[in-house]
Image (cartoon, rainbow, N blue to C red; front, top):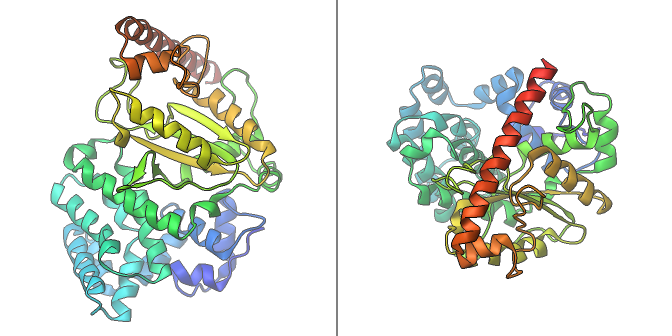
Amino acid sequence: MFTADNSVINGLLGVAEDKRQVVLHLEKQGLSQSSGSAKSGRVIAYKVLGSSRGLRKKIMEELPEDLRQLWDKQRYHKFLERIFVISNGIASEVSTEHEKAAFKAALPLVPELWKSKESQEHERIQEIYFLWEKAALPESLAISLAISANQYVKNVLCTESMERVDFCRIHKCLSLSSLLLIKLKMEVEQKINVEDAIVQERNSTGEIPSKDEKQSSVLQKISLKRLENLYIFPFVEIGDKPCQYPDHPGVYCIYYIGKSDLYEGGVKPSKDRPVYVGMSKISISKRLLSHQSKIVKARDLNRRDFIVRFMLVDMHYYACCVEEMLIEYFSPVWNENEAVKFSFGNADDVNNNWHKYHVEGDSKTKETMIKSVKDYELKLKMKHLSLATTSS
């Protein structure tokens, strides 16, 4: 069982009166771990703040009185302005320790403002996250800033809020948070200790059924739950630098998040359903780097329109199992299947349909594949409706 020590709790919640309550909450969320560093526990605690009344109350108590009143009275514009002023003080190295603590305490709340209909408020949020460019931050503050920025981008992508933000600035937020996460090796902290997780999950309730069978897989349930909480990263580059992914075995999911649909409406932008799921028993870094060139070569795809999540596993044997379960659950259009035959994994082959469509731009292939994709997606929708009707 993951044990919450002082470095975990103090880093985000202040001095907890009852550390056991934090641990119990993590267990209820299905996020406790049988092993892991204090840093991994800190990340988990941060991610579930919004879902626990107790933890949310604690973080509100950590806010200075002026910020707490602004938040409680829903004066979010003033709240952001105050945080922005503090961030400028930190960048100028004139802020007090009290102001730094206030800034850190406020960061978990900032992503909750993603639904704002005011473009200026989104710009303020982004400017707050750009702080890392201006100042050398202590590690604990850098971690909080990176996680907050990553969560904000996840909240905004593929929603109506994208109409009120500059995509380049959103991509910049994502790039900065990714650079910090990689620099601090935070992405490695999300590795699944598979067999320990299976033992824990067997004692929990709730099932995620297979789409083809009225059964549930414990490992599939674990994988889907973890996938929701994983950080997102740019797929092709971070800023002006190539992405550097972990040199570990695992599974990765690639998502299309562009402004327009693919295949004449056959595939819509989504941060939840991947267009491709892959794995490596040795290094997902090598596999992802090999995929990047395919996107770059495509004449009709923008490399910034893709993000990736990766799920590292402690034992490489499980990588192929998790991959197959996620493919079965999501039915990604770029994974090889008999209905579409649109294999992104083998896209370097000049006879491959993906290559012909996206790299060569062959008109006959485009016409055929657009129809295949639309038919495939329609069948999936009908299948889901049928399962939903049967289960109800």
